Image (cartoon, rainbow, N blue to C red):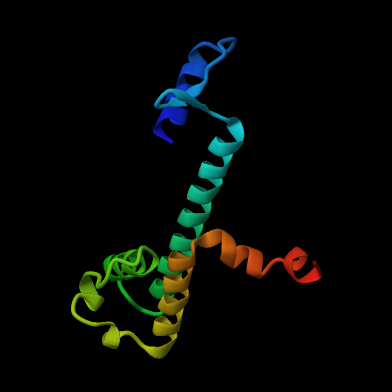
Length: 122
């Protein structure tokens, strides 16, 4: 992603240049770059949604961020309210964090495919 950002900045300075992204000795196709950016975008969107939802439930921003980061990344306990246990969360917040854990464990794309109309028609 950093190489692609650097390439875009270079492209702004030199609009006619043909630039490629390399990882090791192999070139990365534009399709792969778009896939990485779309995954990153979806990750940020879902993380922001879960943080926003916990904030609406009355938890402070630090605890919301730390709890969502712990759940969606499957890294254990968070900081703030969930520093020692998730038992301090209310039932709705626990269900929301279960969804975040599933989203983090299965990754984002399988969850989106499960809820897509094309998946159920095939």
